[in-house]
Length: 230
Length: 294
Ligand SMILES: Nc1ncnc2c1ncn2[C@@H]1O[C@H](COP(=O)(O)OP(=O)(O)OP(=O)(O)O)[C@@H](O)[C@H]1O
Ligand SMILES: [Mg+2]
Image (cartoon, helix red, strand yellow):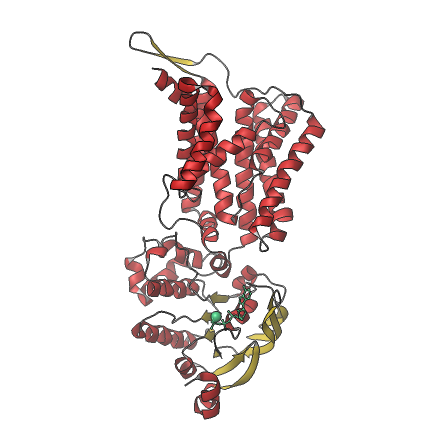
């Protein structure tokens, strides 16, 4: 589905991502794990072309390295970014409308979104900035789903959410996978994300230091201790 | 009676300040740069209108050409001057707008010289007069009435465009979160170009509408730039409706100062308003919560 070769992301002199290669097969959930500052967000930004990067990105065997962010969105590569990035002055409804700006059937998908997060329906006329942090996170996830992603990339979707809601989101991810969506997941909660993942990559200071099946990683005491802090 | 008359004369002038402020605010809240070349871009467009008019004697065509030129100029400024420095620094963008200000003035001087050209009003004819009471007489020039209607009409049109259309919502979205707007698939470069185009075309329109009063010269929009900026400060740069209200308040205030105190103090008062507003209510008179950047 997605194959990334030698991806590097630099911010001036800061080398955030150093020539990493990874792939996501169709229908997989793949996790990228790593400590704060490891370069997870930068890697996703590189895949989405939110920041400039070096290296090659193939999507369905097509070289999309030169594509802009919106061209990648058109293809169905959707990023739900870190820190929510909702449009605070726009209403909840307008935020969701922007979710289907390029792709996805607004009428159909908004029903699904409201079913998934009923609180958003109650708040639909309210400015997104007036929502609680958790509600904004739900809105960010819902907004990403509005565009019918083929490959959904989520950057810490459970940040600031109550455990019940986190479980709800993880359950939704499993369901989305079942419906055929491919998912790239970045999470602080390594244990939880490994449990629903097929495979995982471990990132340390911009490099992939380990990668394996999620099950294997979950049973590898050394990996768990040194990288995952479980 | 005098006060009513100053209000009536102040509104059309203020509506133009409002249009200037609307364009400056739209650009500011979307791309985050205070456009110092706004007035001169309108001035240059007014010269385009003048040239077309001298060639064709068709005023409407001339105005249309100026507005279209304004849209193009906005797109070009964004694409070739702003985009390359967009993510480097806001200071850099600011300096570039100052550069554009000077280049446009210099170009206009080279092409058209410094002697003023007169420019026709949209409508001529005797002003509307109303008698009130014993010896009260209110004068309302037709052209002023038309300017007000056009300005308010365009403001409402643009407000509706920003409120309900998909592209309009995308403009507001982009002004609030650049990364967020990128990841939903908004072409932010295109939106920025569009915003510059709309903004400059508004200044072009103001240029041709004010030209009968100021004449067409390379410095005709100096005051407009300053007053537009002040109206924006009054309205709070994050609120587009505030811009228009700020403009009208400013227009009325200016006439009242001119009539009751002295025209010499008009500019001083404007500067005083900027300083007081920035010191005590930097978010403007009508700032709403959760609107735009800053
Ligand atoms: N805009 C930027 N300018 C300069 N350096 C940056 C920028 N963004 C990130 N960095 C640096 O790049 C490195 C990787 O950052 P990144 O945000 O990708 O990490 P992360 O793995 O997502 O961390 P976290 O778990 O805290 O979200 C860090 O050292 C960070 O300081
Ligand atoms: Mg991160």
